[in-house]
Image (cartoon, rainbow, N blue to C red; front, side, top):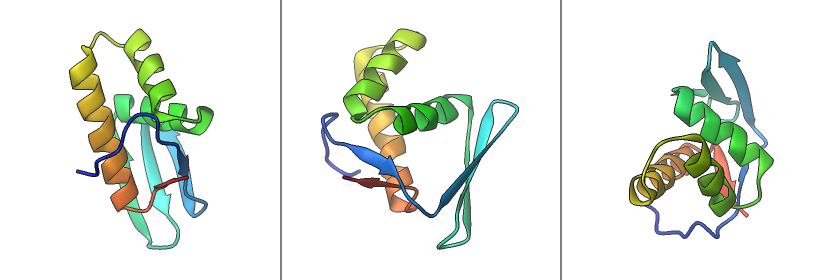
Length: 93
C-alpha cells in the first residue's frame, strides 16, 4: 500500500472516462484500455475526489455520510486510492 497521508492531493487522470450506472461506476482508462468497476461506496469516493482538493476533505465527508469508524474509513480510503493510482485512474498532485 502506498504510504501517504490524508493531506495529499489527488486528481482524476485526464485519460479517464467515468459513467455511473444504477449507483455504481465504471471507469475506463483510455490510455491503457482498462476498465475498473466501483461499488456504490467507491462511486461516492470517486465523486468526492472530483469535488475536493485533499483526501482529508473526502474522508471528512465520508465520515459524515456513512456509519463507519475513523480507522476503518482511513484504511479503506487509502487502500482504494492506492488501487486507483496503481491503475492510473488518479494521480498525486
